[in-house]
Amino acid sequence: MLEAFLAAWIGVALAQASPGPNMMAVASVALGQGRKPALLLVTGIGTGTLVWAAAVSLGLGALFAAFPLLLTLLKFAGGLYLLLIAYRALRAILAGTTSTVTANRTPLSNLGAWRRGFFVVMTNPKAALMWSAVATFLFGAGLDSAQVLAFGPVVAISAMTIYGAYGLLFSTGVAMRAYTRFWRAIEAAFGLAFGALGATLLVWGIRDLRS
Image (cartoon, rainbow, N blue to C red; front, side):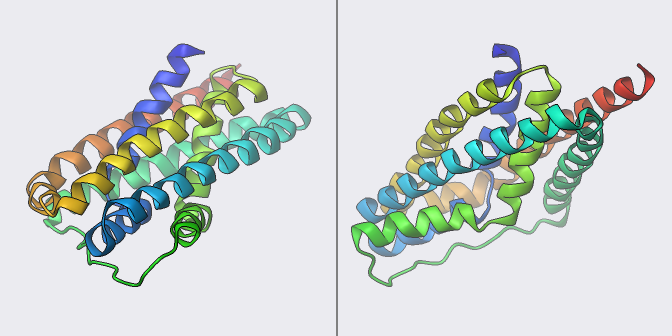
């Protein structure tokens, strides 16, 4: 279980560090309103992460128990999806493009900041696909629903640590220069890690068909 957790967490952590809706929401609020609203937004993201973990672990676990072939099919689907986002990350490096972060100066209450973080992660279609792929990876490694559910707090802590660091950095204004300078390295690590996870899922799917 620990090996599967570590492999999945590396990929997820790199995804969290890479530019996306969650990071952009934190950065824009930090730039426009400062540290506290950004960190409250981060707690909303962490809460949403726990909800996603519960949804995919319990829902997919029940489906896999009823239809074992579904796990094999999702290994192929998840593997191809991970390879796709790896390709997009590496293509962005070659194209030399990156997302821009703008300051959000619309005042947010404490609850409003938390709520924005929660809904950013819950309404992000990439989060649904990513959690499905991660759950498929963990189930494919032989973990049960309770063990996959236990991965949720790991990802929530990781999310709050990484996005919290973004909130602190972007609230100083210094991080924009660092982000502009190092985004290629972040995208490269992100692409390679998810490419490796995607290839692993495809290999597991092929082995299932041969057995």
